Length: 469
Image (cartoon, rainbow, N blue to C red; front, side, top):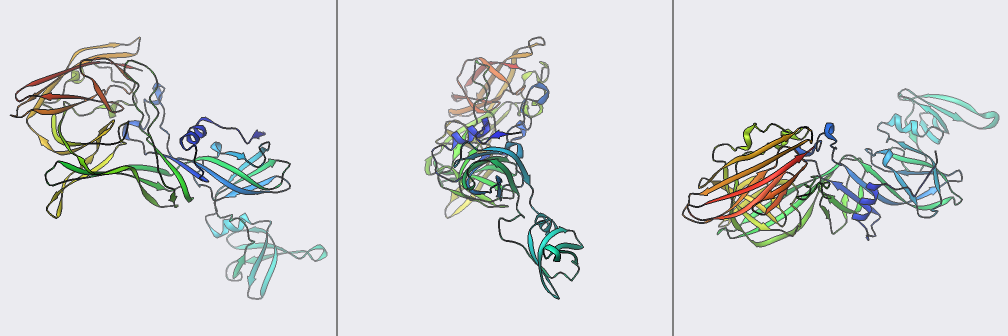
């Protein structure tokens, strides 16, 4: 089957748009490691999908196209998805591909020799050197064709001590994973091409660091992405784009698909060595940012992890009620230059004590658009309760509509800035029907409501949500 080299597909277009305008010969787009709730987002039985993983690699290469249209590129990822390969010939845009094949890298000396069958090699033996065409090789023997014309003969050479060395011809290493094409082109010789493909084995994760000053009023905050490359290939001077794997919730009041995941373009070229991990700055570090104290309150643990493959339609289960008085924590917040929540990751929080640093906490970062939040300590003065005012399951319409009321009480003698964290846990596809306090998204299935609660006072938050599957 013939196909044009200019054929594209949506994934390639998305990555190209993400890195448009750069002059780098190598562009790499890496998706973040999927979180536990997005392993099969929405459940395959309900039309869900597995999140995109791995990396999309786009490289500019110079290749030699033979008179018969044979072309080859070595050093591609061993984990390449051959069906995703797209080759665009910049020298001859009218060229077409008549055949494509992927050659896995040679993992042993025997496999390397077998790749050179048909090539002229030099075999070193105790009796001297033999130069001929390698016809076959296995673990015990080499078969070499010597001479030409009437003097042509085939010799079988033992590898168990008789063969001392084998010198292979120069050229692209057949020990590396390669792509090979047969092209229909009227311009043999050197061609400038753009190769794009998806590969597994490359992923990134986020880590955060916060250092409070001794008074606890300012904080140094930094965010790092660790990119791990196990594709089997190296990419030097890559223009790197990191894509968040976590899907964003649909806008309130609508049924549109999740928003496009957040993208982070790294400002300087990066070397992604095979088998290596590299850390890059995710957002600009903040040296002495204002640290705002806040209390977070969760009426119940997040149950959403258990309902990604099927929806919870039981209005009696938990009855939307939290456990006891819920959980409250003292935290500090810092503004960050993002329009989305930062990617999931661990934050390590320290506090200066004279010349020393003391560990405060080490757990998952909590973030919403424009801010990052870090736990400091437990809080016993903010308590509350949660209950479902109404819940209706419609089997025919495939919906559950639930109205929730959360009450918090401040038992301290000081006013408290409280962030009420609520989980729309029944199913990943949902929309808000109403809310009496404006919410902020802090994750695909997490809402946050802010309230200033006076000493001895109370605050009530009410919202209604519909789940659809």
